[in-house]
Length: 201
Length: 211
Ligand SMILES: [Zn+2]
Image (tube, rainbow over all chains, first blue to last red; front, side, top):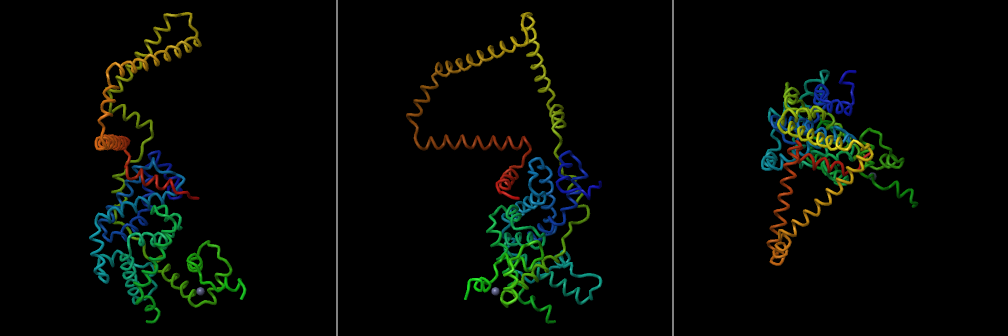
């Protein structure tokens, strides 16, 4: 049986027997979602990579303390969330200054973000439009409070249920619902101009 | 009119909107879809949520640069099985291990000599004797400690101190003891190679009940 076919829990069990290939498979399996979440929180590629690396190192180096009755990805996202929020708390000033230039779509940001709506069959115009929309969406997400951002990304991008998001963020279920409700409303308001624009043009 | 009509007229709740907008295994009451079909406001809310969900779903997962996995793996130290850890500890603290072994061997040797002096002893009588001897030894130890404490005047000194104890000195004493306790806990965790931040987050996770 190849490592790709193993469940997360099986791979964790193998890691506890010091199987490095199992650990590598888990890193490959989760590096994209964890990096995506962390990047969208800190908006700095290099920093996001450092933090993501730290998330995996901490996760594996403390694997013996992982309770296997929980999903492995919950534990991983929880460590990612705590680490990122700690970092943001220390660097609060930076986040605020970023809010000052809402429409600035830097080349780095444009490169890092794109909608997977675009495909080879689409016309160049549609691709440009999708890319532009992705940029606006990423900027709108960046303007949300970190708690709202995490909650809405976990819900809509990662498709996590509310209870799991509450676990990951360490807040009550009701709080998660409030976060997601407000995040949606703020995103809708921020994207107001673009919202129907695509249909009318 | 009737309650059924009123129920149908109520605008959709957040859960209902989500169940209508996001495909999944939600169970939706019949009245929700019926209401959405009739109510412009709720239909618009569902459509908006749908659009937002589709847009967010379409965000490409971001990828760390090439070589990321290798760099992570270089830093990862997977937990070793306990046998290996014991062996490593032995290798690291050779003198201490040798001393411990010598001590244990000496104790066993003394025990054997002691038993050999009484050839009539059976395993049962040896066990009974051991229990009796160790109980006696333990009690005499307790008595010795008690005698020492009283003899040394510690009790009188403590009573004297208690007489002069002010709120401030009590606070300082409690604070000092707490700090020493916390410091030793931290040292213990670091010796056990535990990241203290993870201990708390794991406890938070455990506290939550989940299916
Ligand atoms: Zn309605």
